[in-house]
Amino acid sequence: TMEVVSELAEMARSAAPRVVVYTGAGISTSASIPDFRGPNGLWTLQAEGKLPESITMEQAVPTTSHMALVGMLQQGMAGCIVSQNVDGLHRRSGVPLDRFAELHGNAFLELCRHCGHEYERPFDVCEHHGNGAPTQEFHDTGRRCVQPGCSGSLRNTIINFGEQLPQRDLELAWAETNKAELALVIGTSMTVAPACDMPLSVAARGKQLVIVNLQPTPADEQATLLVQAEADVVMEQLMRELGVPIPCFDLEGFKGAIEAEAYGIEFFVGHSVDPDSDHHRVFVSSETIKGDTGAPWDGEDVVHHVEFTASGSTVDVRRAPFAFVLEEVTECVHVKVFLLNQTLAPVELVVDPLDASQAKMHFIR
Image (cartoon, rainbow, N blue to C red; front, top):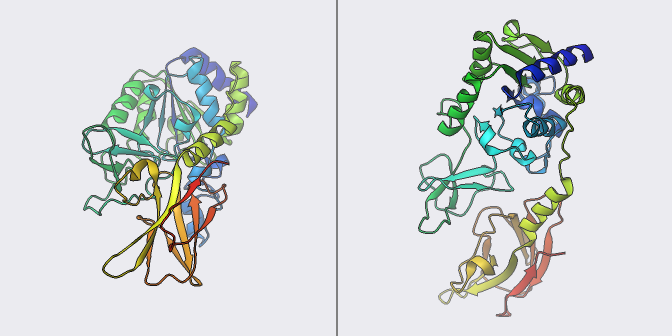
């Protein structure tokens, strides 16, 4: 492998900065996000009646390979990254967005249908829906745009089979592909078009194509160089050969950002009483958004779900609004708020709905 990577380093030096890197699921496996067709891939294990061991995408951090590519961009050794991944790790690594194309979307990104504003969230927008009324639009997330003068519905950016790729990313990817001197493919099976067509078109122009993948691909015969090894092993050695340092991912900064996202808001647990039925409604709300309207807020940016326990029974509320109704109140209500960052313990407090005052809980520790 060392000799092959040395050859790759010489090719990269000669082609820089017209090196375009094409990444697939294999670049994220060392972050505990499974690929599809590898030995421990999602589809491979499903065929055996098994499920892969993995973590949530919210918990994943960029791998050595992700950070190495940031270093190559910073040092002028690469011009662009084109990715099929939706795990958000390239963005999280700090790649310049004007040199990065996400062909299949991003699980952490949602767009306004009306004004096009982007919202990059600390949570998977497909898994965590807001409290908006259901629509006929498959991609809607239940949240709305908060830009001045706009309240358009937000949609996720995931591209499913048969759907059109995002125009901006597709155009950038092809523009960089058409001037590439070296196509470096990392961790992809080269079977999904048009992503696989791009590096093949570089080879068709007589330029160099390098494929780094553990398994054989249908494009191997067109490749100038094949490296059948783990992505992190190859990229670490490549960066040594190039004399380019691998930037460090700021793990503590990342954790701090997630905590600031969760703890920067004052939450209330309160209640209201229906004058017609005398039923008590217990809810989680936020002073910032609730204002003077008294309307409950679902905590969509930071809350995964809420548990209400009263009279010996527990209600687990996973969809907005985070509230439930009691016909009679005979004792205090226990409220447990679970944050999206699952590494943080839930916040617990006790509320007496018979007391008209609201219980205020700062998410700051």
